[in-house]
Length: 244
Ligand code: HEM
Image (cartoon, rainbow, N blue to C red):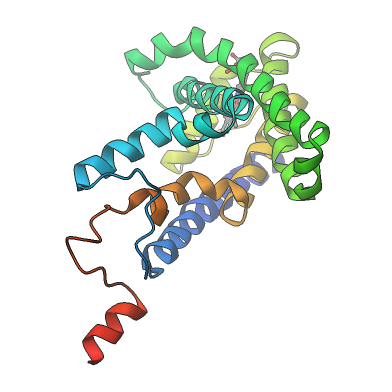
């Protein structure tokens, strides 16, 4: 077993642990944070089913972003939809036999790689070209965009420029999941792609990318607009009511 294989195997175990426990811990903190006030963005649903529908439209269509800014919506939605297809396409490296719908997704996942880069390019350009946005842009905003763009670019480079041994790569990842390690191909572009992916997994729980799970905990989206029907008690307000 080469030192390279051992290093990447350990790297991916660590990155997976950090991602899973980090995001799980963050969600636990979000879930326990009191929501003392009723603050759903109006017009808001008055039933729980309505809230579920609102959340569904928000996370699939980015509805509020669409209403507020069509350009950011176009680039943002394109990037996220493309990322989803790319990730679904990648499932073939982690499943044996490959599920039939993962086979069907393959060509779309490839086009999506270009759409993903285009979306990222638009979102990044805005951080340079729009004065108001440039003013509030921090280095970490650039870092996240750079990381995602570099992952997509190295992935496309493997597809079109410097091929790797996908059969051996798949054996490596299936082996990792079964704790039966197999050698990792030592192609530089693959090693770069994987190191960037591991970096993304590691920074995810301490980055702005937490907006993905975070949206589900946002009181302005997940609250029912029933303040006139029931008394809202949460966190300190619940303690005050109990203490009376
Ligand atoms: C451990 C996880 C990953 C592995 C093993 C992996 C592996 C690969 C391989 C082997 C390719 C080349 C495909 C080909 O030649 O047909 C590729 C392409 C690509 N990867 Fe990854 N990748 C991983 C994670 C990611 C992630 C998290 C992203 C996005 C954030 C990503 C984005 C891309 C893109 C955009 C392409 C080009 C399009 C394509 O061929 O699907 N990869 N990846």
